Image 1 (cartoon, rainbow, N blue to C red):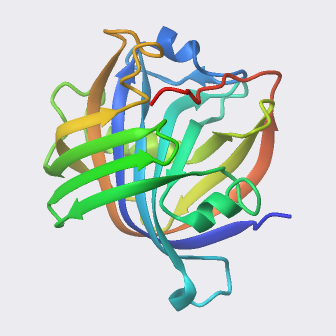
Image 2 (image 1 turned 120 degrees about the vertical axis):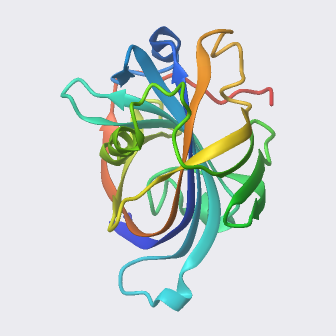
Length: 248
């Protein structure tokens, strides 16, 4: 039995996005996912999100939970044309999320430590999972335009791209099954984030992404957005790829 939905406030959400050689993505994506192509490249990234007042329907706002969370993602398309994101790994600083994730609610989570400085303009965030497999660092400040080298034409086009890819398919302990979760927002809005530094143990792994197959593309930030997470039917397939690695 799973909760059909939970809601709350997206206090802060960073989308750190990379352009990737489609062949590199094809080698790590399980069936039935295919890379979603934008101007001849695939799109992958990290969602770093602070949630507050998170609670099931009917629970007073004052009893909602707060957490810092990270999800490594790849923009994908299914054979029927459905678009979304494949999520091989979720991390959180909430012990509760690690307990209910994948059980009472879609998406298994690994516990991690987050260090965050957020002044409203400057953001510095560092995350390291307890198992040592996932590390993320980013430093940036509020921007006024996308990176000039981005594959997206403008802020409207990149905003629309990620708003449409609101369905996430999370890897589970069952290699043939993916948890499905849809993000619904009442007022979708993003602004550019100018990044001075970004690193990810996942995207920096040359075994998964050989030199020249991945580059940073752009970063976006959302703040103060009411939202709901809605559970969906699990997606089943023939086989998957294990992206959890023993090395940090």
